[in-house]
Image (cartoon, rainbow, N blue to C red):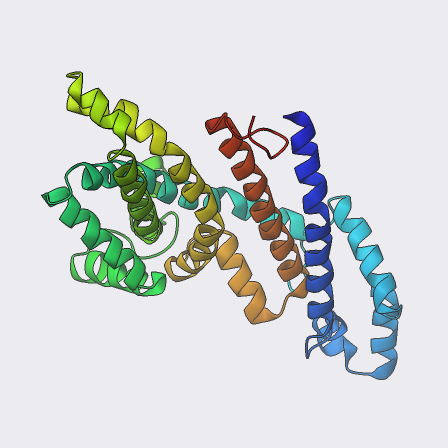
Length: 321
């Protein structure tokens, strides 16, 4: 396992360096240069601009600047924000916690709801469970995330006034757990619903195939309880594609959560990214892009590890044992 993990990490390194190369050169090809953003009005004169570029190292060739930036990146230094002057790593670290809370809650809710619903839809295909699964799947696939956000805010915040429309805490809420949960319900529900369709469909499909196998009919013929046949024998066999679906969907969930954070004013990495893009704070954009890319790469490695742990027939060398 350790050798396979090292192999996967080494295989991901070229992708990581390719992403850093692309991000760096795209940011340096932007219309407004970094010197313009960092210097503001002080960079209006040619002399001041030249001095600022020399101070920031912008007078060096682009490949040299990339190597210097990559060296700082590998040591954990993402630079300073050109708008606030704060360390980019510290700004991102402050936003990771809220993003994990939102994304983790939404994904956990989708798993808790989606897997049992998918199993019930496969077990009883013409029941109310099957219709409910089909309706939620249709809504999840057809409704864009931003539309669900606006719809949730309109009904539950504007019309009914049950839940707050934005933020993570309210000024009068005291910053306690109850206040956090009230603000978390709507954005986490949107993340959950956006992830639910794929999970329900994959679970129902996998369980539907398994429940038609000969060994399932044999288990029923032996007189085993139906719940044991479905959950103990059927679902266990169908677990592998379900786990793969969950892990494969995480990058899409991260991208969707960025939009949800922006609309709900949730103080996570998504809000920071949109603010940085609107203000053209290139160092923050590059730092966030690298962090998100690392998260996606790590998720891919984790998916391979879980796949091999769940299915012993897949060897650590990539071939069946």
